Length: 270
Ligand SMILES: NC(=O)c1ccc[n+]([C@@H]2O[C@H](COP(=O)([O-])OP(=O)(O)OC[C@H]3O[C@@H](n4cnc5c(N)ncnc54)[C@H](OP(=O)(O)O)[C@@H]3O)[C@@H](O)[C@H]2O)c1
Image (cartoon, rainbow, N blue to C red; front, side):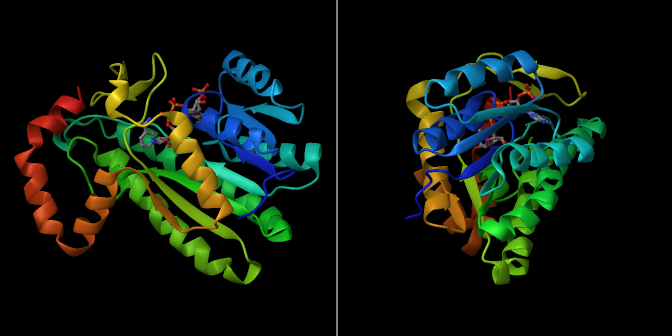
């Protein structure tokens, strides 16, 4: 297993939620951290929290779906720590609604955040990761295994991450860069986490019953394992593993199962 002490990690969208937990777990292992988010005050409180673990914590407030800002984020890591060992593309937003009712702008917003917001930091990071034989990890979802009802833009954006991961793995093999993909299941969410409704408006998600969902700490520990073992795909939760197995072999059976449970998907999308 790779020792994370002294490794320099940029985690996009790490001012709260899963991204912050990944940053905390990495910091506990002695990694130097570059935190990121768009809201300055949220970012500062995350930095204060991580500062209790050690002092090598830097934050850079920016929107990673903007090319220039994403470039600056990677530059910040190099300016402060002189190298980059790990990039975790964690930023992502979800949506809800039938395609027929969808304001097409929803697709644009979701792809800008989830796909371009992952590609823009990755491009400048790869040249730095070649020097350290480092890791780039994409945070996907069980919704990225197949297209799910009422989640078309979200599912397809996460499926795009699979394609990007596969391409980079082959391209960077000769440079010994580890490229990982983590398929996350339903996880605890922070108060006031938003999704996008069919009409494009923001909607606050309902609180989740904590006994039925993964904690952000548990997800973060799996992400660290993916990096330390230089794994390709990490699929979380038993239902995720079953879904992946069945989808690869019996996609029409999976479709049938989903059709038989459509009310549950509908309920989850409210
Ligand atoms: N939670 C789940 O159940 C679940 C399940 C499967 C997969 N996932 C995936 O896990 C990842 C994290 O989810 P989460 O639930 O932890 O999300 P979250 O609580 O909404 O946190 C998202 C983080 O990203 C930042 N952010 C959002 N857009 C950004 C942008 N364009 N540029 C820079 N920072 C940005 C947010 O801060 P600001 O708003 O201040 O920018 C925040 O720090 C996502 O990729 C999501 O798809 C989550």
